[in-house]
Amino acid sequence: MIKRPVLAANWKMHHGPSAATAFMRSFVAAHQPRADRTVIFFPPAPSLPAVVAEAVLRTDILVGVQNIHWAEKGAFTGEISAEIAKEAGAKMVLVGHSERRHVFGETDAQCAKKCVAAARVGLPFMLCVGEKIEQREAGETAAVVTRQLREGLGQVGHLITTEFLLAYEPVWAIGTGLTATPTDASAIHTLLRSELTAMIGTRAREIPILYGGSVNVANAATLIAAPEIDGLLVGGASLDPGAWTKIVQA
Ligand code: PGA
Image 1 (cartoon, rainbow, N blue to C red):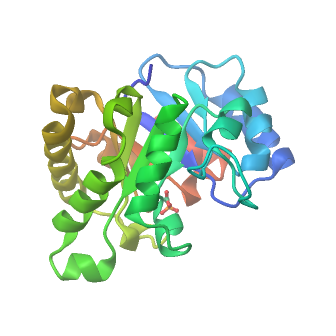
Image 2: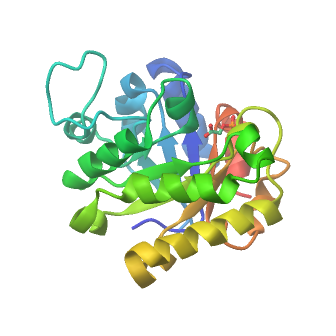
């Protein structure tokens, strides 16, 4: 059961198995389990077993993968399936992170297939949405995130009973030092929640919606306190155990 707030660390392409082990030893010693929040780590796939091993006694910590392929198996060099991720210990998968979309060209249709693949094996997923700066400046934010949400979840059908989360990550805020104001982020979260209600009814209230984009030790508490922000998805500031511990305890 995922408790809110949810504090999720996206390590991207950082921390191999040794660095991941050292990080986790430091983090689990500094942060005692708290029943009122869930901590998630998305390490690079080869570091997953190391993170899982260090968190084995911690029910407040979940470990996931940053990406999956939608097929069950096959000739897809370099990819991992939901089944393989699950067997390796993943309890969550990130789908449609902006770097997947904008660096690797992942489409809404592919994100939709990845959500289905995760749901098929009962692997909870976190679907990311967010607008680019030119879309924001053109007043298209609401249309973009609504489309990403509808299309991303559009194929899940009855499998939607799988646990899932959303993350709103404005692309212009990722790794740039710019953050959405808590008010702006809250407005988008409210929009996402009402779209989700139209899709899945009152269960939408239970779906955590995280904010991501240049979250750091200084702004975490204010963002987490804003209405409709149920957690944070953090890249750069999650790489240091000291900073990450402070954010988790914000
Ligand atoms: P950032 O990355 O915290 O470094 O901006 C967030 C993310 O990409 O999930």
